Length: 423
Image 1 (tube, one colour):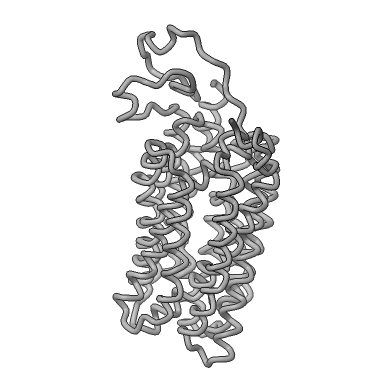
Image 2 (spheres, rainbow, N blue to C red):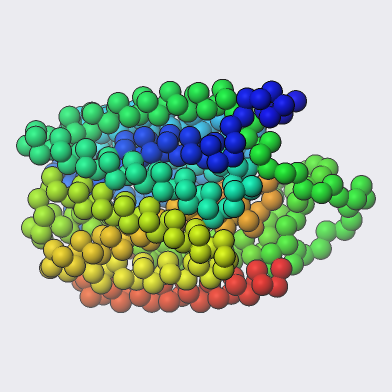
């Protein structure tokens, strides 16, 4: 009996919205913390290179560990348990970060918060993907991301307000974030009880012919969904999931564009070290970036549902513009650069996820999200370390290298469009 048969399930849109509220509250928690990661680590003696490596390693953990959590979710089907556990780790790590008095402990907690994201994300995205099957992938993920970013706007402002009142004391500024964390966990547990099986939202694909699983396996064509539905695949497929070639090209595109993408830790370090902005005002800039994130996610999600992968062409352009604007001696240009950075993040966290759901069938989707994120994790670590190290050497060199990387990303996007057009 399905959740609908029991009358327990919410409509797909209401499920997305309630899940968005959970993400909103949790974004108050972890985006509030991320808005001051650069200044916090700098106050404990970190250089731009160290901040770039740590924040890059955090993103690598958030993405790379999904190579484990994604397949684990598919094998165990414990999507809710992994989602709840990952959120709980993040909710606990952030208040503790405010109490860290030494650099190594703060670095460990920054990475621990990102590990929580790694644990939950493939399972959470799979749960959401079922509901977006009926609402539209781009629109569904974009609405979730927009709600998410309301929290990303409120969190940094909350931290900025507490820092202003407490004379830049990080302990109360991060300690207050325990409140939305507890609220988010309560709503998440309620949603789990109300909709235990979100897979019921997604229509089942047509049943294959009985003999189909036994046919000789040839190379997958561009964009082909291998083993899409029906009988369980052979054991060898369970160990090495067959994924469409278009998915491989897509993962390469996103890895390249992320390798040339600066972390906000380096941006905030620049703002404070160049005396463009006081530390307690940096979260306000981050809040503005998160507002740009929400708008960008909605706009690009709407565009993706209409024109497909062509909507992604704006991402490398925005990524290349970030260092040109953000790492100048002008506060106005640096703020604009931070807003452009936020717009790029909005596409990364909404449309990029929607494309995976369109390329990969439901029964291997969490695995695909894990593999996809693992590739990006390596890219995020490389990108954080690269941009931090180049910043310490030469901003001009940083701008040139990032521009070349994003040009390569655009070339890969052209290949992806050819693959999906031929599918």
